[in-house]
Length: 275
Image (cartoon, rainbow, N blue to C red; front, side, top):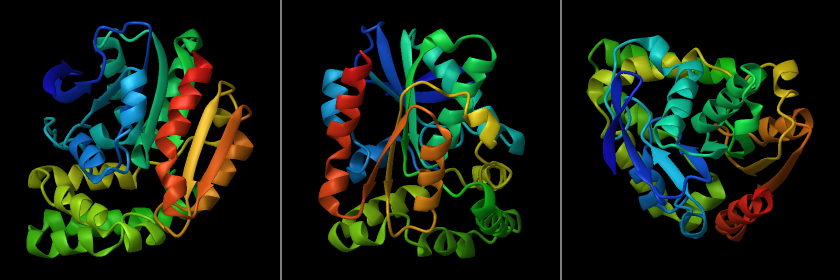
């Protein structure tokens, strides 16, 4: 991984096949996580996919090893989408598949719409959405939680903030029972970010939501949706609604560990079909 100048800051980028200029999956991680957390936890490592396809990962601003800014608007999904497309341009990727988990879903969908609305749809090959977050009717309650956490940080109550960040389960209940080390790894990375970035990161997320229905219907390219049950922060209702709105989408729901284990091969097969 290396820091690269993107949109006036330095973002940490990991490229599995930098010499492959034909196509790439540009991957965005979830809120308060990073590339290292995705890989070390094993949940979103995508080993098979990275061997067969170019996968460009990066730490979002304020996350992992990437630089932080203090402007809340910089962390809204609309701005993170601009970072994602700038990473793709910097990496000289050809046909793009935009993908991510949780916050990365919002980033990917908005970035895809940015390309479509700017007349650059020919750059897009597909979209991969993993554990879509709260959205629309379920977003306000989640936003209130983020605002509370941001307030704790603003009041410099970091000793109270960290337990609040990590007290809730961040993966599906059935996974946590079978793979508790994943939760431990993810909590460690959540608590390791730059403390000064917590407030803008959390407020930026609180001010974000998925695009409205009519906009989403414009995304008529192939879309792969992977979701799991037993997770209030990533409700199945969002994934199912996206399946209804996105005209060329398919969905796979996981309620057992073996289903999640299949996600890497399902993404790889999806990319094989696109190419």
